[in-house]
Amino acid sequence: TVAVKLLRSDLAEDPVSKARFTREAQSVAGLNHHAIVAVYDSGEDVVGGQTVPYIVMELVEGRTIRDLLLTAEAPPPEQALIIVS
Image 1 (cartoon, rainbow, N blue to C red):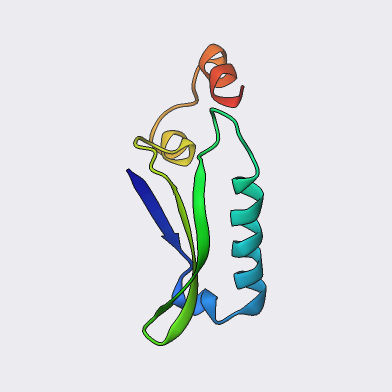
Image 2 (image 1 turned 60 degrees about the vertical axis):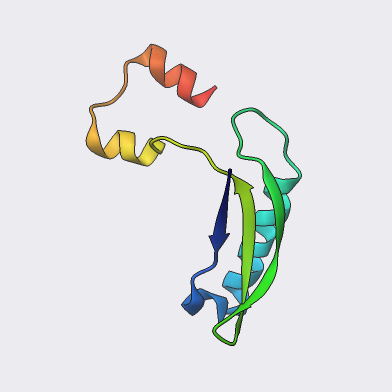
């Protein structure tokens, strides 16, 4: 199962945002670590007459660290070490 990340159409019109998104895809695709999502493909497609960059990546189910921090108390030090290691 994969997730497809598209750059928002309003940002796809901005060359700086488009370049940043493309660099992100290339940077992450070059990494191989169990704690980093795998990137399988990236490119551009035409959506509604506009060229929009995309990233095809491994789908990771669960909560984000942001969600955990916003909805729960700070984790105990032992759990925090596991999260950041």
